[in-house]
Length: 95
Image 1 (cartoon, rainbow, N blue to C red):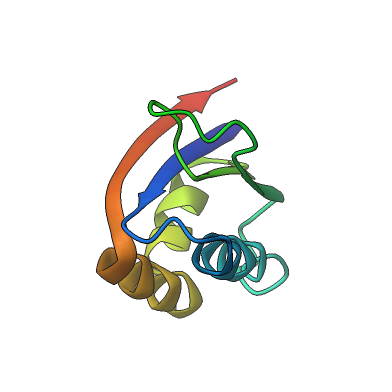
Image 2: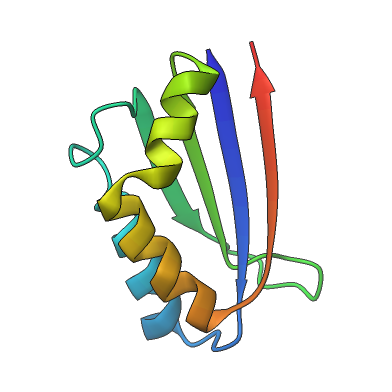
C-alpha cells in the first residue's frame, strides 16, 4: 500500500478559497479508479506554521500512484491548485 500525503498552503486563505480546493480534492473520489481511499481536510488551528489543507490518498502500488498523477481529472485539479497555491509539501510512503 502506498500512502500519498499532500499539504497545501494557499495564497488566499479565505474560507471560500480553502473550501473550494478541498472540495476539488474530495471530488477526485470515484473519478480516478486507482484511488483506494481519499480524505481531505482543512486546518482548524490556522497557526503561522499550519498548512491550509491536507490530502491523504491510498493506492495499491507505485504504479497506481503514477497512473493517478497523470489522470486527466487529477491534472485539472493540479492545474487549478498551481495557480492558487503558496506552497505544497508531499510525502509518499509504503506500508
